[in-house]
Length: 103
Image 1: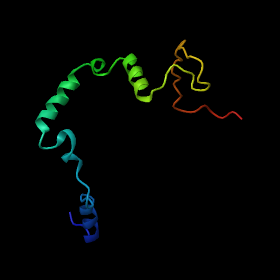
Image 2: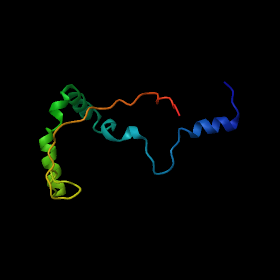
Image 3: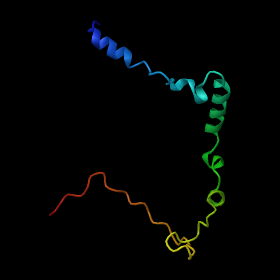
Image 4: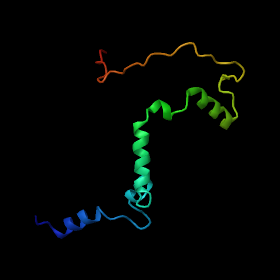
């Protein structure tokens, strides 16, 4: 394929990074220095059931209360009352197409 010089330079510069930036592939679990060990760990974590990786909700509430030093059961409006969950509202599936305007 033959292209103009300006188009070649434009396409070439798409693949270059400004000074100070580094390609993502050199960071994280794909970094060369620890790639084998990190990929092995990722594969093990992907095999484990998700429920065993996440802490139970009670632990999350205790952790958040310890971090914020707040009582999570207090009413956020008045700060006096205690909130109690009585039920969970069902998810409302918003229609993909809004209803027609009848006005």
